[in-house]
Image 1 (cartoon, rainbow, N blue to C red):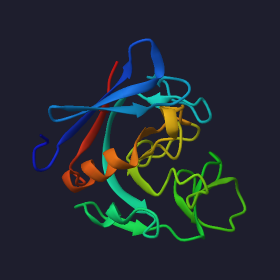
Image 2: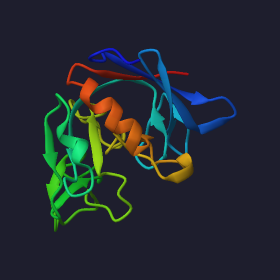
Image 3: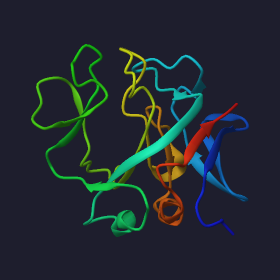
Image 4: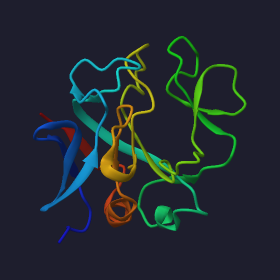
Length: 178
């Protein structure tokens, strides 16, 4: 059984499959998807790797029409509207920040047809200070069927996310290890 309130989520690659992982929350282990580039200590924009290190969970976004459990958490959660994007251009002044769509620079649309971001938690990777080209939009979000690789995020099933959300706060750290 999971404790009330989690301080650390530990993520490691599944043996033999670097783009899939195991997420330990208290004494419970869940399957997760990792980046197509596995885990990297030298994260770069577009490499598809999940960054090695400690990342605090800051806040999140959710689709109220698709994932009502997004309100059941101590994290600051905001609804995802059709105009929410995330800038991924290293030279843009809003690099690795939320932006309003339409937006002039390349960005990721947060309201996705594949529903991966129906619950999407922001990790503090490359936010303060931001370093150009060190990776953007590193989130903890929902996984595709079969835990196919992400672009560098950590992803779990909707059932796992719904189970973890009430136990998370802005003091929870995701620790990606080798």
